[in-house]
Length: 186
View 1 (tube, one colour):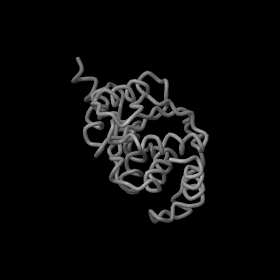
View 2: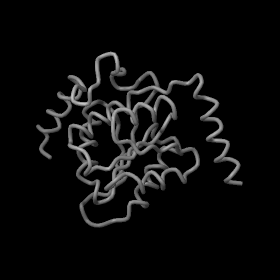
View 3: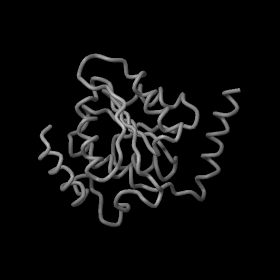
């Protein structure tokens, strides 16, 4: 995608999330400094390669430091290899958040959730994006790249990156979720 297209997408998304029905009161803060989110691991398989490239340029344009773990072409690869790389970057603290893109987002979500400390969420619209962050404190977003237009991918990703965890009544549920992981990994 030409550089000028990234600029157009950034302008459209930063200018408003109107195509997803997001109003000003729904839009969180610009680049998520309140949660200290600066570094993002991003990966894809061959089916999500084009979407990954779009998101990589978009997130960089917003000021995030993007660590691309591959794939680096449309040649056929196995999504578990790249989903694991994204998950490990987040689990080790090398990145605060991760994004993995494949054909549907389902398989990558399953792989990421096998890694201790990861709460990956497959999201496909505004409601699932907000819920994954506010209620579940997801630290990895998985997407089906071919299922969305470039503008939708960027709008959903921006909303996910900037939505804060709600805390409060959600903490006991997160703690239970992580307790299951601890108990089952022994």
